[in-house]
Length: 220
Ligand SMILES: C[S@@+](CC[C@H](N)C(=O)[O-])C[C@H]1O[C@@H](n2cnc3c(N)ncnc32)[C@H](O)[C@@H]1O
Image (cartoon, rainbow, N blue to C red):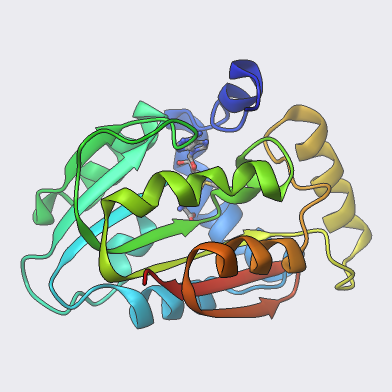
């Protein structure tokens, strides 16, 4: 289990001020020019995987950008927001207030409270914020399993350290984030992510875009 200090560092950067810059800084600039995975690819992943019966949980909500932009398959989807950081929950809940989401403050490293069962769960850009190697991070999948319905979609994306070419600026930012504890992905690989998913889920699909691994899977 990573230390409480390391877990806190993975979400501490998200204040009302930094969240105000997140959409253009991370989703606009960094995704396209540094990580080389355009936000449209992440939005398309959401579009492919959100559940048809409108019960969703989003883990690590950030600003709620994707939940706002995705075309839900029904006018009144049931959405649960789960995050350790109350600033993120507040920002995302305000942004998608029209769907009256349920907010859950929780650390995904701990067993989850009695919620669900959900038909889809998103973990977009969560894993690279979590401390530990991929084997340790994979405990989040174990914590999610009890709140998933049979056949639920599990999907997300994470920035990895595979050998995809990256610019000097991208490498420098990744090193800085790792030093500050904002990211903890220096030993993360697509192969370890794939193994962690295949141990727990079925129909695992991994797509690499730039330095990002997008993953889609299904609970058995
Ligand atoms: C980089 S943001 C991702 C935001 C959004 N999902 C996206 O794709 O842009 C990471 C999110 O994970 C949350 N987070 C970090 N560590 C967490 C933990 N241990 N438990 C739950 N949420 C956590 C942060 O508070 C933040 O909302």
